[in-house]
Length: 213
Image 1 (spheres, rainbow, N blue to C red):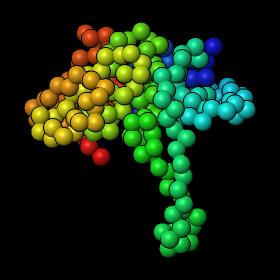
Image 2: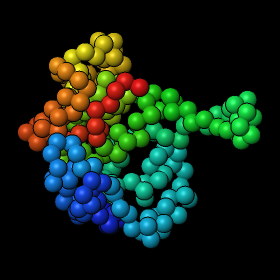
Image 3: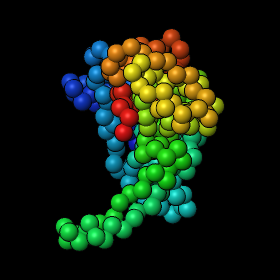
């Protein structure tokens, strides 16, 4: 079955389309990390698989695997991310006359809301036979990718701006990623991530540089 639930990958800049197996990361018509690819699904296939998945007892985001651009034969790299609590916020809700709930993604395994995307990235990297994952980040993306790389048995390389506080690295210490500090703005490490992935046999864990947030 492979990726038969995915019809195509479409460039958000120029509209060029690619077979899901053809392009790994971005549209080759653009330089650097430009040309993000949007996944276009075959929703008839997705619906059949999603209806079947609702009968299971999976609590994590992999309950919604039919909506994820992952090969059907891939074993998920997961720490049971997703399925975090919805907290009632009655006083603020009353001000707007709505029934308000807040998703507490601090309960994700690494404490980061990006764990959902990182789980998918690590799954695809391992299934593709890559041995390195990398991102440019000073915060959530780095902590999340380091955790999931450790889970998957992959090397992890983090590119951070030279100006980033040393304290931002503390949450990644236990997972032992390799961090490289880069002079200049946060966008500079993003280019380094993009150009480094081919010679290292790695894959990027995040689309773009992520400021600490």
